Image (cartoon, rainbow, N blue to C red; front, side):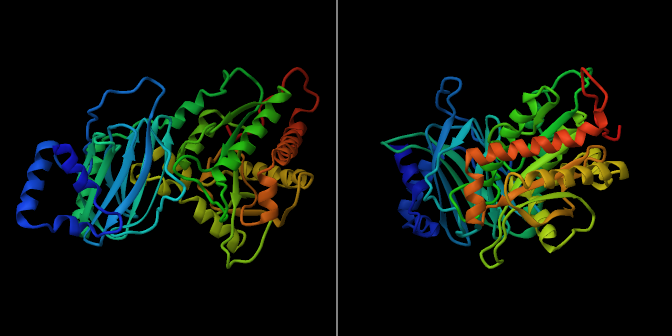
Length: 450
């Protein structure tokens, strides 16, 4: 009975300000508070997790997030997540920009397409998705500073699912900054990134003389990339292309190939760079798809980008700025970036590496013309963070515009993806062939600056 009363208080009405639920008559309010004290966990600080109270499911059966909704106003806002079972979670804050992060181990999001992720009360927007294998994340962008007032999980009762409830109250900048510092201290050293497992995925001993090629499907997990106002997500399209390219490259046995991700997980930009360097890559190919806003005109066709301090044009600058925000989208605390990575990000590519990157970019554009339309200015450059491994020739390929119906039709065609992978594979062959002429039996490493 007590659990039922707490659930009624937790759920409220999605269309009614939360303060109405708290503005009851004095007697009813005291009764509700007593029930909450009896069954609800103590309010969480910015970094405290609520322990699960239900039996854990069999291995391989993660909990499902079935629905999510916001209620409230600019004084108090509540997030409610329906769950298939109770789960452990962690809630904390990040600044620049201000965000609240919900980490949900062993949870899969199965929210209805109609679920709104728009603004309500103190939350400007929110997004969700896989953050790493076995780990989901929800990121709430804040309209203004907040404090985490309460965060707890309710068991399923009376035909209603289990629920995670997060209450945010209006705060001030100083208090929010203090909560961020407290959360950072409580987290301690960041956990090893799950993407590091990609180092071993497909990696062979260093004695293998074949060139190592790292293929990087952009975005993933909580970061879906662009949609071009369609039902398709960039993260899924580019993963399909990357898998097709890997198959093409491995078919002849001439190369070793590692993917920065092979499933729908998020990989931070710096980790993608680390994967390339840890595998001593001879070539790094990052695959993306672009989109223009409806008022920015029409454009279509593939483009290939190399690293540059100065963007080749305004479109290249826009795209680089957008792609470089991936870590913020996924709720990464950039203040904890290691010195090694910071050195990579600010030590621009060496002259030899830049030259090799430019050579491969030209070869790739020429080969991709056989697969379909390329952009009228297909060779571009900008300051993409993912290209900043100073000793690995690197390019970023925009395979087309999801805002173009013609390009989108191609990108969602398996036959076209295979054709594209074939042309990209031919470009890789063309890039390495001059350096392997006259050599039989094996293909030596291409220059990588080491």
